[in-house]
Amino acid sequence: MSALATMPPAPAAGDEDERDLTVVVPVHDDRVEFEAILQQYGREFDKRRISYEFVFVLDGAPERLFEQLAARRPKGVSVRLIKFNQPFGESIALAAGFKVARGRAVLSLPQYIQTDPADVQRVLDALDGGADVVTCWRVPRIDPWLNRVQSSVFNSVMRLMTRTKVHDLNCLMRAMVRRVFEEVSVQGDMYRFLPVLAFRAGYEVAEVRVRHLKEVGGARMLGSLFGAGVYLRRMLDIAALIFLTRFTRKPLRFFGLAGSAIFFVGLLTCLVLFVEFLLGGDNDSTRLKNRAWLIFGALMIVLGVQTFFIGLVAEIVIFTQARHLRDYKIGRLSEGGGGRDDEPGAPPQEAPPPDPNPTPPPAPSEARRPRLSTGKPDESSVLLGPEAKELRRKPRAGEGGR
Image 1 (cartoon, helix red, strand yellow):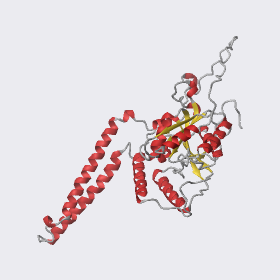
Image 2 (cartoon, one colour):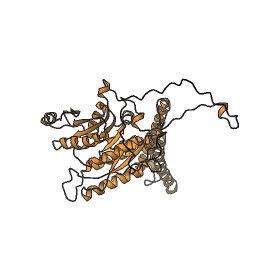
Image 3 (cartoon, one colour):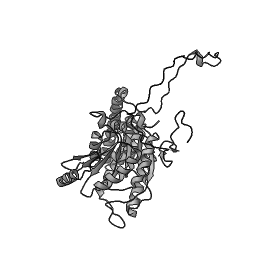
Image 4 (cartoon, one colour):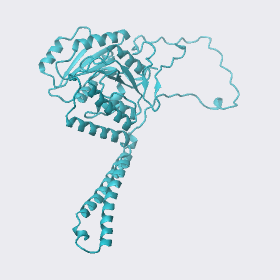
């Protein structure tokens, strides 16, 4: 069954407002490729015969750009514009677009044609194959080599620390079903880590290879190093992500381990000073009141105890709120009858006589939304579970192998 078929309908004023897909595009300046995005991606969506809309979020872009884009909107295509008075960042822009999305699935794109629009078919096939989140891997990369090295190091560290198999967290092209961005909390600049957060929350995450066409901002041949603040923020983001994915439900393991390490450092320092005092006798060089290291050791002991109790208080808070938390997502559910008929060795029951006047089954509703997939999902879509496996759609009853 398609992932889209199991999703709740999008909230809307009426049925005519519901869409199969919403495309959210954050816009930062006037280099946005407005017509190219509408035409090339719209053509791919039309091939699937799905309903869609575009939402452009102007994140601190000039006022004249808003007026220009409003005047350039083509007829027959649902295009909505949102403008911030000042820049708030990519994550906030995407969150604003998601909030007004009317689609049962959401696709985010950069403001220019970064990847081949034809590859969006693979992304939508992966959604129909059962994935809740689809992230893209740009292969081969065409940006400068220094940028590729930095991106490779960053993604390698993320895979090592978070135990996921995502290869390109910096690619903005990704898709997800509605319930993901409604249930997974993303704050600050954490949107780039949404596939990791969704995976740790129990959702199915798939990765699709896409062809890299262009990279705006890498004008230098060799690339460029970012400012020190950028690297510092990335390190803090990684630290925050590790804590969120590993210790959110078990804070005492983090604070208890850190507090114990700090406590034993202080205790060891004080013990060394005490042993030196015992062995060296009472003199100015070994007298404890003259040793500055004694203050350091005492402070470390106090800090370690405080850190441990911070974790203990956090553990109590998590325990009292556990009934409101859920660390799992149900993928499939099967219900059936039980009783004596299912017990081994039970005598077979005679089938009931056929109804002489059977009631014909109800006709399927013609207003049902089409699936995002028109055929077999692309086999390059890989589920990022504990063991990677090809993402294939199971045939429905009576459909036969294809």
